[in-house]
Length: 84
Image (cartoon, rainbow, N blue to C red; front, side, top):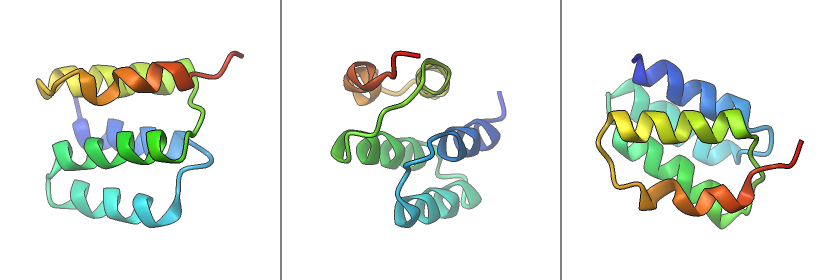
């Protein structure tokens, strides 16, 4: 899995993602800090209560699992999945 590519797809796939956090995530990815990038994504989604679609949530879950991160990081996002 190309973690950098997936993380960028996640950020770019969330239309309401805050610009400042997007810049931060891009910098983390540039420096191969994928875990911090995912933490920033999840934090921004939760803090701003941004709705995400199922595909984006799956990407978050898949990349987080691939990096062996604690699923509690993204589990709360499940309640913010859009009903399409």
